[in-house]
Length: 262
Image 1 (spheres, rainbow, N blue to C red):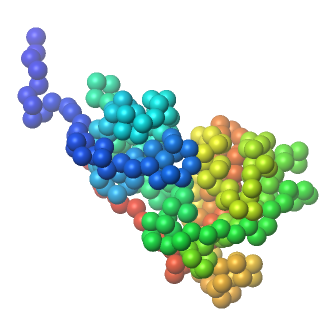
Image 2 (cartoon, rainbow, N blue to C red; image 1 turned 180 degrees about the vertical axis):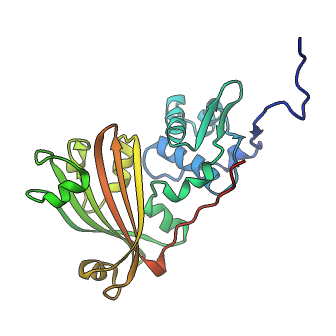
Image 3 (cartoon, one colour; image 1 turned 30 degrees about the vertical axis):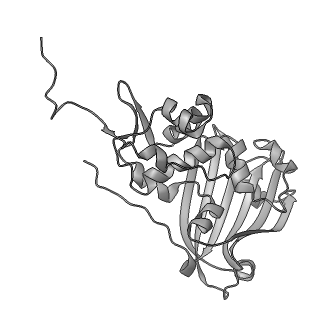
């Protein structure tokens, strides 16, 4: 019978350092499970937890955040479903091998991005209406004429400077609570992320010149090159929302850190 593997070749995950727990902080924005999710994801995105790193156990996180194990599990399951974490028998939960390729395609919290950069976040609703006879908009989500849709245009600001113009379609059947939200003062993205489940997301990144409406909202000259991220989400086969996010090219960049596959 073969004995135990030598320590230098026995499979194992890199264990997190003891001080890791003390470095995890809630940001006070939204449901606790989402705050825990962001706290864990940030350690992955900034490289503090490399591939194979074993994250703190659920019981340790439960005690650290003074919450229920169910809440912690929801945050971890969310990250695992998106490919950032992996569950491994006899080892625990570890950072996925290619997790650091994910941040560019994450569902970003615009307010959080602005605050992390030292800015003061602001929000302004420009337009909100139910879609009626507009086949072009319906085709964007690939839904029938019977599906109720909400169309929005809103502006995210850093101080007094426009940071992002958001154009959004929401399938009301998939997110019925959206119609009861104070959209005049609250951006739709964080509410949708916190309350509407999704199983798939698709991002398309393009360079598009600003038209009259975009140049007016972003306060840039007509035909200014903009970085446009178009994001669709589904819950199973049901389309949930489409967001088209416009950024003046000189004011925004996407960053990701990659390592070759071994």
